[in-house]
Image (cartoon, rainbow, N blue to C red; front, side):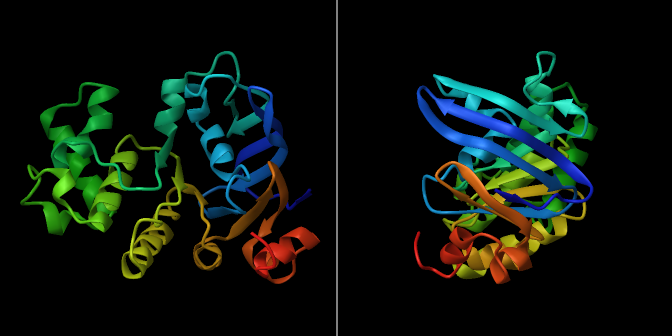
Length: 257
C-alpha cells in the first residue's frame, strides 16, 4: 500500500484490521488523515470505505460479530483503548449518513437533540446552540421563523443540511460523511460541497464517495480502497493525476469499478 503520510495528522490508523465474523473486511489499514482538511475515500462498492469510516467513531460496535485489532488514534486518544469513553468519542466524531435522516421532530428539536442528550443546557444556551448550528449550515435565515416546523417537511437538501447542523451541535472535532450527496440533485450537491469546503476551516472531514469528480472537487487528500485494502493514499491531485499504483490508475481511468 502506498501511504502518503499527511502533515498535521488528526487521525492516525496503524495496522488496523476488522472482521465480520470470519470475513476479513479491513486489512492492515495504515493512514494519517490531516487535520482541518477534507479527505475522500473512493473505491468500488463493497471495498470497505464505509466500514473504515464507521471504524473511526466505533459505529461498527453495534454490529454483532465484529472484532478489530490494530490502532486508531485521534490526537493522543486510542479509539479502541480500554479506557476510552465511547459516548465522548462520538461527540468528538460526528457522522452524517448517505440519505438525510432527520428525526421525526421539529427543526429546533433536531439540532437540540445532542446537547440535551449529553447535558442539561439552559433554555438560553440551547437556543444559542440551535441558532449557531443553523447559521453554520446556511439555514438560519430560511428557518428562523419555522423552528417548530416538522423536519421531515423540509426538502432533501435542507434535511441534509439540518442533519449536518445536528452533528455539529455537539461541537465535534471530526465530521464523517458517508455519501452525503447521493440522494441530492446536482445543484443541491454543489451547495453541500460548498458547505463542506466552509466547514473544513474548522473541522477535520472524512467523506466516502462513489463520485470521483466530487472527490477531486472537494478533497485535499484521497484514498483508494479495493477489497478491504487501502491501496493508495496521498494528495488528491497526485492520486488522480499520477497514481503510484496501477490499480488506482485503472480505477480512476474508469477501466473497472
